Each structure stands twice: as C-alpha cells, then as structure tokens.
Image (cartoon, rainbow, N blue to C red):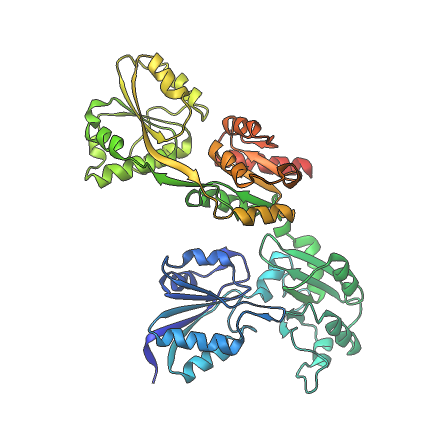
Length: 510
C-alpha cells in the first residue's frame, strides 16, 4: 500500500550550471518541506527552497560520506512517513549512475510514494561545454556511458574491456579520475590504439570547468601535471579532436574569474546573472543589508501630506521601493501622486519607478547628484516643495543645491544601510587562500563595510593580488579614502557599465 501522506521527488539537479535545472525540478524544490542534497548538486539551487524548509546535506566525496547510502535511503523514508514532501537533489540525472534506482526501490518497499524528475547528465553536458560533441556523423554514431568508479581489476567485473576497445563508440567514463590509469591500461591492452584522443572535463558547465586533453598514451602524465582531480568525466574517442574547433564556454571573456559581489543579496541577482553569463564564478558576500527606517513616522507624515509637495525625487531603487511600500501600507495608491513631478538618478531607478506606471520628468545625463542639480537648473524651483526619500546616510550635494535654488527640501529617511557580517569568515578564508580575483563595489557603503569586515586583518597582504571594480567616481573616492585604489571604474555609472568595464580590463590584460 502506497503511503499518500508524503512523497519523495528524486530530482536530477543537473551538472552544475544552475541554469540547466529543469522547470519541473525547480517547482518541486519550491514546494518541498525537506531538501536532501548531495555533493554534486549545486548549493545555489537551495535558493528555490521555502524559507521554512529543512535543508539536509548528505554529500559523498572521495570516500568521505556524510551519510552512507543506506542511511540516506532510510532518511528519505522517515521524512516521507512524517507526511512531508521531500526533494532529493542528486547531481546530474538520478538514473545515470546516481543510485536513484536503488532509492526508488527502497521507497517502494516501504510504501512511500515517489516521482522521478530527470536531470541533465554530465555525461552529455560536460563534453558539450568543453566543445566536444559526443556523437558526430563524421566520427561516430553511438556512445557508451560507463562507470569509472568500479575497480577494473576486481574479480568478476562486468566491464567488457574488449568490447570498449574495439568499439568505434565515444566512451564516456563517469567518476573515473582515480581509476584513470586502470582505464587507460585496460583499453590499450584490449586493442584500443594508444593515439586515441582523450579528454577529462572537471566541474563541467561551471565557471570552475577545467579541460585537459591528450591521447591514451599521454593523458595520465598530462592530468598529473595539471593536478586535475575529481569530479571529472573522461571522454575517449575521435570526437575529442573537435574541441580545438568547437570550444566555446572557456572562451567567454570572464571565464573562471572569481568575482565577489558585495551589494545586498536582494539586489545582487542582476549583476550575478550578467557576470555568470560571461563565464565568471560569482561569490555573493553581501557587506550591506537594506532595512526600513527605524522611525517610519516622518515618511508616513510626508505621504499623509503629499498634496503639499511639488516634486518627488528618487536617488536609488531602494528609495523607490521603500516609499511605495509605505504608501501602499497606508492604504493609498499612485493616484495620490498625480499632481507631482518626478526626478530620478540613473536609468535603473527610472525603470523601477516605471514599474508603478510613473514616468520620470527628469533623468540626468550622468548618474550622480551633481547631474540632477544641473537638470533642475532649467526648472523654476523657487518656493517649490521637494520630497527626497532616501538612505539615512547620504551625500548632501542634492538637498543643499536645491535649497540654493529656492526650493524647500524635506530630506526623509526611507531606509537604512547596515553592516552585514554573515560571511566575514568566508571572505577572510578566501582571501587567505588567494581564491578571489575581483571585488566589486556598487556603492560607498559596500566599500566601507567591506573594509569593516577586514578590521584587524593584514589588508595589505590579503588584498595585494585582488582587482577592485567600482561603479563610479563617488564610490571610487570612498575606496581611496579607505586605502583601496580601484583598478576598474564603470562609465556610465550603472551595473551594465560596471560589467562592460570589467570585460574591457580583462581583455586588456589578455
């Protein structure tokens, strides 16, 4: 009798690139009460889990098992028997050397309902990202997927080395790095030509991807020299030669660069997405947290008396968000703003305002307060009342100059930027291990808080090899005041400008 109260989803998490997760897999993760994930399932996928979901890591790596397979099986049964929905995330595809079949049998034996959500297997995707098509009409029309984890020298092995050696198929060995020597020896001993091309692809489809090529005769030495370790797949066959022509992923402009994102996590997705698409490995270490103003009474009072204002000026997307959040919480809507004129700093702020159906009357040519002042110089501001909802700590250029023009400016705190030190130790450890290429700063507060995280550290030593990228001159000035000289500065002062400047700098470096 199948237990209807709980269910286990055996989910293929894909090969590593989060973008290769299927829509159905994402939906299952989002609805699960428990997420059980292994070593090869990208931790980034956990962002889809519910806030109150139980997250359990059961990774198995090189003989170091968090839980044995038997205990993992029993864990799945136990959680499902509690009436919970369980997402079992397995790297690649659960039924391609993923032991998903064993887990399904055990669940069935215990009367637990389950579903299988296929995933993109590394056997196909890792070679593809390395520019190696595993089939090609000029080379081979079939492919064999083979476990590389079995010891080929054990008694009663079912490895048909004579078939593999004589076959014209592309041979793809999964989890075989430690057994590379045995694989090579057995293929050659059974008649595979020693000049047969071979490739190993480590961490395929991720920004950490590393590809090594050679022949059966040379590959062991090449892998040793490259210090390549698992997880990696092994591809044997003539199709490997196509990599010289078809390699694409590791030619991306920021491929393999490890870039720290310091902006608030809620706002980091756009920058992370752009950099990831360019091949970078993004390390989210937010140094700031954006919170509502401690005292919301002044903003609420201003909204209550909104008819008294002539202009509403936004200097950031956060100002827009917290203003409208408060407006709506007070039971009002955009109709209350119909008499106002609007000004914004930056196209992103303008777009965020546009989400509420409002077009900005002023958008300066450059994205800083001085440019807004220049734009207002064409307006008659004498006696005009201006509402400026923004951060608790902000530059005074804009309100001071508007006041000089004769305007009456109400500068009101809509939100606060506070230090986020959750990832302090992670940051220090990565700097100690030289695992950071670039640190991005998108505001002055990201710089000052970044340096706060390194207080009492030998910053000269830790930051010696790090490249710093700033979103604009104000942020750069803050960095310089704290002892950091930006190597890259965006122009224009936008996220896209920052990304473009980073591409240009790394292309310059070659």
